[in-house]
Length: 454
Image (cartoon, rainbow, N blue to C red):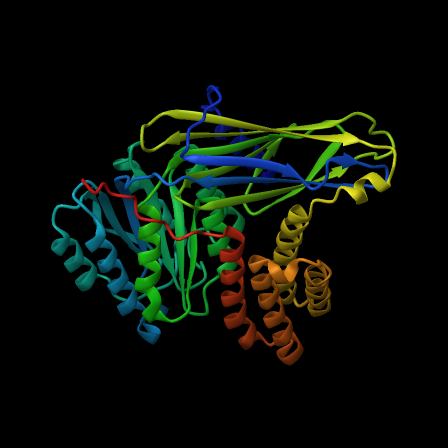
């Protein structure tokens, strides 16, 4: 059933992917490179790095937002509800009459507090938030999402930024509670209806793996609100990201050359079918760097005699002029009979990318191992991650690798001191996973659009 669902989503994802001419458009800069220009008999892994960087243009798209807030009983602890409501009211204050907003609140059931409509009376919307959202009941995330998506669809426009923003401090215990199916709902909405999702986790009891994975599947952002008082700062960051976009409907497609098998994609969720890999980036913001590292395995190095050619394309809509754009990159790797050819042609910049993404994934894997009680497995992954970084001669001059190394060291110190202590892990994992996510996504702070001096 799970495989069938994923295949259905794959078929739907790119049914509208039209062919456009090669473009010199500057909304997105697209590049590609391999870890080596040769394939040698002893080389089993091949890495392809793709980068989609936002240009300097961009504009504020009208928003079509549903704010879906958890009002379960635990939201009354540590002033979470007070700070969440303050953050929601701050967000409403940033909206304009061209934006649509709806508000859904949920406990064991969801309830529509404010139907989706243009923001013409901010004070009325804020009064509803202030007076009608109070902690009670359980946590039915699926019903909250259902109503949120319905509201966004009711005022959907391809010219708007269509997004659900989900707030929770707990674990789904009513309605649909299976993590896979909740993530599938979000992915379905992102793929079929082009509605993205950002998630905000409050406190230390929420399911951060689910909240993180839903945000990834929904093409949005994931936030861990460690202290309730920081809620407004995180909502400010979300609004800034929503407020400046250079490209929308952004999709990267990569062919898988014959003789290679895709192992994984680091950096973004992906869908694979046949000999194609699809990465749905949704929107690209000014200055934002979207890095994607694809790892392939050579099926039979001894039999691979011909060159390997990767064709990668990026399709998107330029927000400034509403034009459809396609850019293509071709990377050729030549077969070589001399094993030394690969060693002599190492790409150090690519080795840094490989070291970063693999160590980042190992840290995520270590945290999952601890959560399943596999402490020794986790410690092994942490040691591997540390070795990957420390063995790279240029690691100390790479800020991204330095930050990754510091985060791994912090987690290693915790494991040595506390092991898998449940209370300590709940707090630490949310903070480390959030930092690891931010490093991997490398979100650049959106830059304000330049204004004319005339």
